[in-house]
Amino acid sequence: MAEEKFYSDRERLVQALVHDCASELQKGIKEQGQATFLVSGGSTPKPVYQELSKRPLPWSKITIALVDERWVDKSHSGSNQAFIENNLIQNYAAEATLLGMKNLYATAAEGQPDCERAYAELSRPFDVCILGMGNDGHTASLFPDAQGLVQALKPESGKLCSAITAKQSEVTGANTERMSLTLSAILQAKNIKLLITGEEKLKVYREALLGSDEIEMPVRSILKQGLKPVTVYWAP
Ligand SMILES: O=C1O[C@H](COP(=O)(O)O)[C@@H](O)[C@H](O)[C@H]1O
Image (cartoon, rainbow, N blue to C red):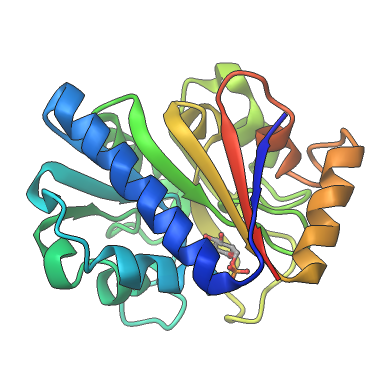
C-alpha cells in the first residue's frame, strides 16, 4: 500500500517533495559516493524541479535520467529532455549529468537498444524516481492499452527501456511514439514518488486503487506492487 502525503496547497507539496528528494539524494551520495535521480516530464513537477535546482546539493555527483520521452528532437515543444534542461539543469543543478532517451534513430523501436545500453550504465539501485500520472491512468509513458505495454510491464523482461506507441495522440501533438522506463526499471528505484495535483487526478488515483487491470490503468502496476515503497504526493 502506498504512503499518502497529502497537502493543503501546492506550495507545501513542492517544499515537502523538494526536501524529501534532496535528503534521499544526499543519503545516496553518502552511501555510494553518487546518486541517480529519475525524472518525469509533464506540467506537474515543474515547480519541484525549479525549486530543487536552487538547492546547494553535490550535484556533480548526481546523474539525472529521464523516466520517459516522446520520440522527438530537443527543439520540439514536447521534448522532456529540453523540459528538464530548462527547469532542473539550472542554478546549482547545472553541475549534474543528464542522460536523455532520444537518440539518432528514426523510431523509438530502432533506438531502443542504444537507449538500453546507456541506461544499463547507470548506477543501481536508482535513488529517487519521480513519476507523474495522466487522467487516463498512464504513468511514465506506460499508456493504457498501448503497443509495447504488455512487454514493458513484465517484471521478468529484464529490460530497462521500452518503445511504446500510445493509442491516442495527446495535446502535445500527433507524435505518439515514445520511450519509457519499464516497470522492472522503475522498481529498481529505492524511492518511488508519484506526484499528482488537483481533484481530477485524485479521483483517477482512487479509481486506480479500486481495480486491478494494469493494461487499463498502468499506474496500478506501481501502486499495487509490494516490492518497493511508493509515496503519493497530492495537493488540490
Ligand atoms: O505524458 C506525460 O504526462 C505525464 C503527466 O503529465 P502532467 O502534465 O499531467 O503532469 C508525465 O508524468 C510524463 O512524464 C509525460 O511524458
